[in-house]
Length: 372
Image 1 (cartoon, rainbow, N blue to C red):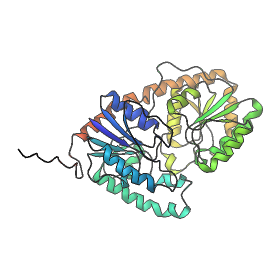
Image 2: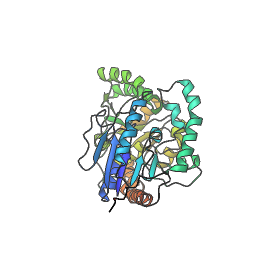
Image 3: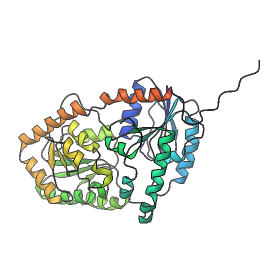
Image 4: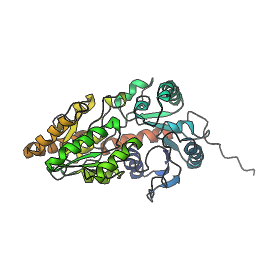
């Protein structure tokens, strides 16, 4: 099977796209063409895939990326058996003639509008009905896979869930230390950036440093740069997921300080299961799914309460036995319930079945018969 995978929004090294789904397809013996913003993100494509470079869609500047994506997807689909797209935006750039097409629904598309800081307030009120219509049209014409069980309520039909699970090391990682806390993932106000800066300030007199590993929203970057220059924390920017998680190993705690917003409330924070998988005790705000998942693997703290986070960190620092127990329990739970290879085969099977079924739209133009 030949699969064309496309994104103009996500980083080409996105863990779900590159390191889980594309890797699963390659391991199953399939061929992959990947349309993604390689140059913009300074990424060298792996040799196993055919890469097509496109501009990245950022902020309000998306028209150029979508124009390029339409052409790139047309090229990528020329001999493909299936097209798999990862962005809502790409629903506007699908080639008219294409193979069976799948949209991977990564997030609560309407709920996520609230946390997109580049959108003006008027757009956040105008866009939801337009997005809803685009989703309804996609459901009629495409195959869908969902990243969360909670997304089922947004659609009228049944669609398979391909969860955001992770690779769990077979052996338990090294025990957590006592002088470093980490955060892995995108950094924004809604994800607790302001609170983490205050936590770093409060922990400094205790000799505990903070490592932030991930890209940051534009409004947050100056604050992070200032904090790094003053020695308050280390901000590493974007690091490929597999390397970022190795950097997190041995930390006293991993932070997940999401605010209680619709886009996060009923979703599984992937960073929590990643911390668990790598033997890092979790400190999280008490969102419903997070509370259930990390039971026995970490500590819950109130929303937007840096002092409570600091108390939780210091309690873990002063209790090595509890740190080790939380780390061991987290690794065991992740291995039993959230190991990506356990879900990979079902993901590949869904795509194989759809590739062999008729497309819901006009398929590729058939080759003309050659006169005898």
